[in-house]
Image 1 (cartoon, chains in turn red, yellow):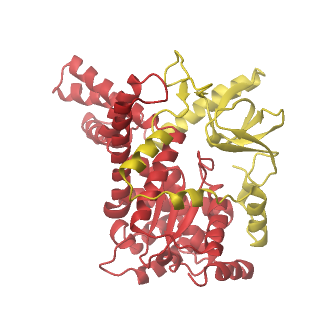
Image 2 (cartoon, one colour):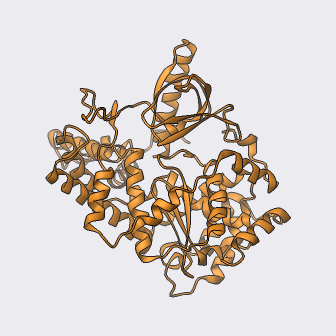
Image 3 (tube, helix red, strand yellow):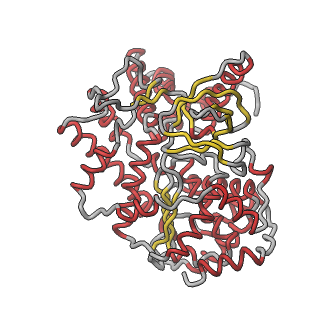
Length: 307
Length: 164
């Protein structure tokens, strides 16, 4: 990085962009931003700038105040809500294998320990889809499993979802006002038990948060940047684990063939496999993955063959 | 965000490292329901103790993403940093809510905020949402030994023996 002091204009642009980002993501540098931007552009006096800085700090705090335990309860309700639309695929052997592979992969993520741990479940749908609820509850459709021809490719799918969990992408989809109101109510409550009216207030914020996350996951999708981040996280997990990350590319190539133009699921919520592959190749190059081992192929077929 | 986390992490490491140099264990709290303490700083190690949410455990040493701790049963082993927080976690005792003058930055009140009461209220208001399968999937827990066997059988060799 250059050490030269940059001119003011790009700095201000960056700060403004940062300010927008802060409200979305709660970045650390953000609390300063309101003050700096407003004063530098001359639209605010010092008092107003200070007030804005304070409220930015409050917003940051609400995000940080989601403890792992609260993240766990959010994740449970998100998974339960997704399961209203999608039925579970109740086959013990397949789900056991999915958990063996997925929980092992999670150990190699940047956040291997979450409050309730990582757990995986197949969904009874041909749609190509997968959902990562906060805290580590991960749902994967039969249609998604069919994009994988071996264990190495399935672990790539799971590692992508695990990264959504450990980077807290779900929580970041919560509209900020919701947490501020919940936090105010909680601040007023002395202990951990809430009185009737307070409980209703917090439940409302909870319901709103669940809606924000599920509608992002199921309808609008995360940003392209977020999805690329999850792909990069998947590469990191696979490398640490000892699988060849190029399996993510071959999985995406198969997915490209399975997605219908008008399809729901990944066709709607994710950048196209083609775009993701191009982005991935910048990180891992063009090398084809080596063949999977016989043992891995056999156990994958045994558990997932009929899925 | 990542940068910030890293900054905090490195700050934390410096604090811990200096404390470790001074030979003073740094108390940390377990922030997961159930955490595992292993005999090596790696998930490929053997689980030698379990710690529970809210347990206050002394960190003796830091190595990468791992902390060497003394478990409540006296066993010394390694736990991943993601299971720990520097905040104290106040548990409800004898039906009384924990009270403290400490701010939220220093203290997390167990069960405060989105908790089982809120979940129950949410369930009552959204009866079409069914938690049966969520409870079922949470029960699927793969022991560390099975994970290690699974990797070994599949001819998978984690980089650096799983140490991070």
